[in-house]
Amino acid sequence: MNNGTPDKFARRWVNLASAKLGAAAISCSDDFFAPMARMLNDQPPIFIDGKYDDHGKWMDGWESRRKRTLGHDWCIVKLAKPGVIHGIEIDTTHFTGNYPPAASIDACSAEDSGPNEATHWKELIPQSVLDGDSQHQYAVAAAEAYTHIRVNIYPDGGIARLRVYAEPKVNWDKIPQGEWVDIAAALNGGVALACNNEHFGSINNLLTPGRGVNMGDGWETRRRREPGNDWVVIALARAGKIKRIEIDTAHFKGNYPDRCSIQGAHLELVNLNSIDADSQAWQDLLPQVKLQADKEHEFVDEIIDADAVTHIRLNIYPDGGVSRLRVFAAV
Image (cartoon, rainbow, N blue to C red; front, side):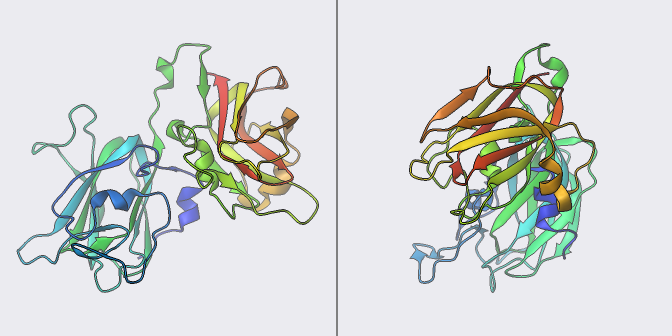
């Protein structure tokens, strides 16, 4: 079953089932063949031919043993942050003779103590047929924020990846007036919408917490052999008047961008089909500045005084890799 496309969700909402953002698989009925935590990895699933461990064939995902009793297997995942869920993806890539024939998804709100026997679960996705080696996307019409989801598989088998696309719940009213907040952060609701190239690293890495762990944990473009520059457009978590920008080139040494600049706009809607041409006309927020290898750069005085913006465009000249981007505004 396919109720959408990956870009429909990934380019609009945050994957709160991301291990990198802090999601965790906290319990399951069984994960004999492959541990439940593997299902939340941010990288696409891989298959290693001929690789076995003590339990059998190594699989990149969560896989339970063959069930010989009544019932079905399940796994409970704590989301990285409470959020209003808009889409869910169940990915069975590389699971062929061992995928579940069907699955369903429940959710609950248990912010303080976590789920227990008295927890009320709400069905988000009814029992649905799955195919092997496939991506299944489901639109969800949830109104409230949830903290945990439960994946039910019928009766057993393996899932490569689970992704829960949601709007993180942030109580902006509790933030002191005038305090600077990173409105590009994924955990606050920032989303990388589009770019011209992400050959070596995903644009989603730019907005994740902490510093990059290696060169693969960032956004890196191919070597540009034609005129122009590379770019990425980001939808901020909320409108804000930008006060400070941080650009981190951690681990990028022989391949960091020579320079960068940032533009911004206050928009209600964005047309992704024309986003490159449209964003080139946005107002300047940070003029072209020099970058250095493997360094955290902070820009305050260089920022051009401008109105509040909802979207930004990061330009890198001519190409290269950036590990993290932080955009602080007074909310």
